[in-house]
Length: 172
Image 1: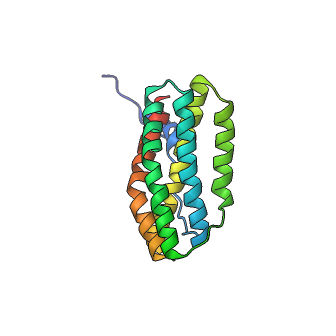
Image 2 (image 1 turned 30 degrees about the horizontal axis):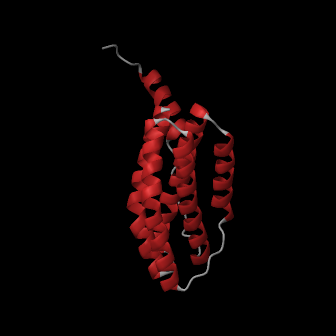
Image 3 (image 1 turned 90 degrees about the vertical axis):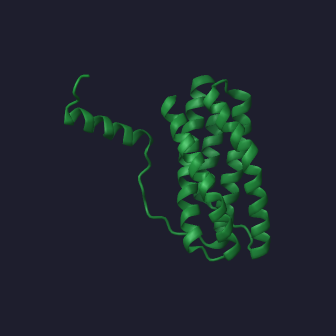
């Protein structure tokens, strides 16, 4: 086995970090109505982009991820609807996540083949990173008990989706 120099190793780690590891930032919990808008956008994007991936991709990892999101995210939609109703909270759009989702869907709609697969994986990493951060923040500091329960419920699967998305992105 050939030894790796410290400089070569550090350069490899630095490049890998730039490519797929998000910068960890402290995130404040959104106000209740914006949290609902955030969660709705994440759920809608996961389902719609997953359905699109099932029609456009032949990559096994992409199709596996998409199949799982299309199967599991409707449960999150139902839970959000139930908890939002219990909390009596209206929905206010979260423009930051909406822009990320809209831009990603525009790119996905126009991409084909390997370009689609890469764009899909990158979009999933970006959105799941935001979801894990916000669901974590809201589960600890959110204003509404029922919506905190929702965040606590969806945080573990969101973490799993993020790890899967990172593996998928790293293999494309």
